[in-house]
Amino acid sequence: MKSLLGTGVALVTPFTAQGTVDTAALKRIVRYQLDNGINYLVVLGTTGESVTLSTEEKTIVLDTVLAENQSQVPVVLGVGGNDTAEVIRQLKKIDPQQIDAVLSVSPMYNKPTQEGIFRHFEAVAQASPVPVLLYNVPGRTSSNMAPETVVRIANQCPNIIGIKEAAGDLVQALKLIRAVPKDFLVISGDDMIALSMVLAGGHGVISVIGEGLPKAFSEMIRLGLNGEVNRAFALHYQMMPVIDYIFEEGNPAGIKALFSVIGLCSNHLRLPLVPVSPALYEKIEIFVNDFNAIER
Image 1 (cartoon, rainbow, N blue to C red):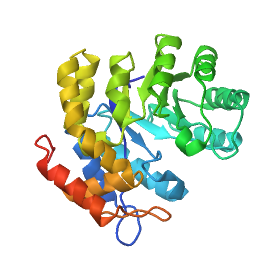
Image 2 (tube, rainbow, N blue to C red):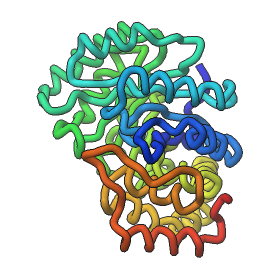
Image 3 (tube, rainbow, N blue to C red):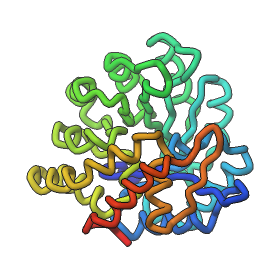
């Protein structure tokens, strides 16, 4: 399969004022990534508000991204849930000629044990026609995938090739990097510690701020992978304020505000999510206007 090293971005789903998927804006956002050094695209994940999209809308989003991308970079599709049988049904619909991998979140709400998590992903691995990335985000699922469980999955499920680790716990990330097989990808799902994970031996990031500042953020990750620590951290420190800003009132509200500032899409979300407050919007706007590495 194509490489998933470096910077992937979790694409937003832009909406019109009438609440429909804004395909023109989505094309602009995809083109913005392709023109500014992003290594791969992640479609229909958390940042894409996938839980509020109908099946028809998900098809529209995916088709729009594929048409604009034209196989220039790998495409990773979000396919997850807390009903293993339903996840398997979704996986069987995937066209492996179009999708390079799937990102599958650990089951949420029903809070399985570590054994339940293992069995869920064992079934997912067997059913998926493309390689699978695990997605650990306990802040949303209320259930952490223990490093020992990830190592077990990595050793016993060859179709599972890596993990998006978004617990925001650098110590846990270091344990994973040390313990998993050498060819198993450990990918940061937390923008603030992404560079630290890369410098510790991680393989990159699936980023939110990276889609708003693709040139600077992907350059930071490239520098980190090449061991150019000082230059990488110089970029990291420049971007730290806006990383905080875009998550201050929730994701994807913050990144959609940034896209609104730079004119790529309107600032619309679907309930129960709402746009950021005027005060936070102003902070994001000031940062964008002052950031000399912004990609316009």
